[in-house]
Image 1 (cartoon, rainbow, N blue to C red):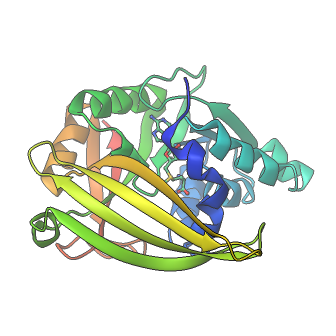
Image 2: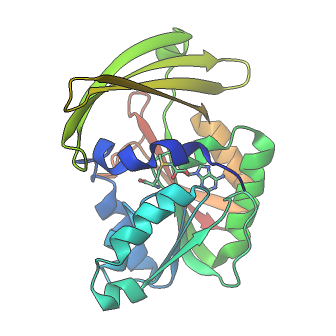
Length: 256
Ligand SMILES: C[S@@+](CC[C@H](N)C(=O)[O-])C[C@H]1O[C@@H](n2cnc3c(N)ncnc32)[C@H](O)[C@@H]1O
């Protein structure tokens, strides 16, 4: 599969996301309600997957980045045996996977679906999801909610928070430059990581990735096209309804 985009920053990922936990109880609640096996596509370092397994639920995680999965595997070996037994980690591409079982719930957290840039790839993924769901199974899809005022800037620079790199005992500053391709509904983000090491030497690492963005009814129609019935569109993980300023659009859909 070659090098995946996230391979390069996998070592920073958990430090960057430290404190971002508000989606976890939401996925845990639905996984418990579904009462069967769960699949997380684009599971990354296991941020959501591990808390689900800790509830006694069998969960499979798939990701295209071996580096992200290595971090997830490193975390699972530290878990108690019964939790570890609940977890299966597989390397794969969410738009072309085949697993020999079906799941009561599949979810794609933290906007990972938006790494699929074309309607063809997004459709291929949704088709795979549908086939891997049991009858009446649940699919949860989290996307960011695009806003016209932000898109209209076309280019924008942001200083993000600095984060603490525990392994190297360093603070790393982050900033990013986003560029929107309004015709193709994609954005390219260049992310700049800057830090000074213990010897006073400055370092910079630049990482670029692309995302697509989807509007509410576009995503709803896409889900319907691939055999899902949308039951809810939330604007946050506290289940408040979607509104234009929500930031998130969280689709809870049932296999039709
Ligand atoms: C923002 S991270 C989210 C990780 C995790 N779901 C979480 O919530 O912390 C996006 C993840 O999507 C993965 N990814 C991107 N494209 C993918 C694809 N086609 N198939 C599987 N995983 C993919 C990346 O490797 C990365 O781990």
